[in-house]
Length: 178
Ligand SMILES: [Fe+2]
Ligand SMILES: [Fe+2]
Image (cartoon, rainbow, N blue to C red; front, side, top):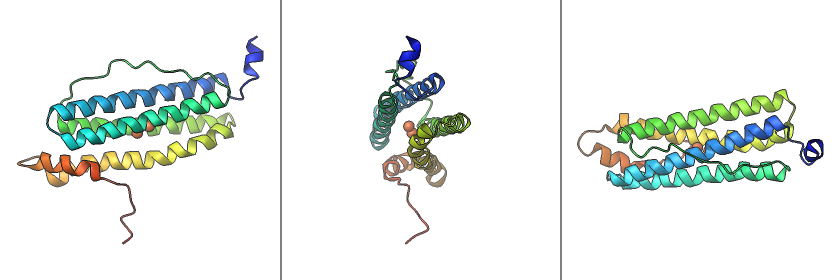
């Protein structure tokens, strides 16, 4: 019976598991960003609250994109459970440090999946992954830039208010061009 089921998909059992792990990672990122949004709202950082809400939505989109791929390939996509989502965070700056760490971890995870694809000659999944690999450039850039604002503007006086206002305006564009 198991062999018959396997015929429905070209995904190896191992790759199906790896992709389901990534689905969970994206769901966790989405939940984390939403928690960050809530903290920002409670602490008067309204613009950052909106920014993290948007990030949360995007992570859910990533989760669904992976979910659909596994399903389309005839695999079993697992709707993940997410637990231990924090309610409190150390500080405004601490949230952005955490956000950057999270994005770097996601990039590393996709690199590992890409590596696995090459080793197992799963070029269909490898091709599907390209969108995510490209997306991580932007994700990391925006998270890193947000953190840089703390250095550039400083947190004293109205600093945090200024940072909060600028965070949603960060875009990943080619600053080498006019
Ligand atoms: Fe993501
Ligand atoms: Fe992300």
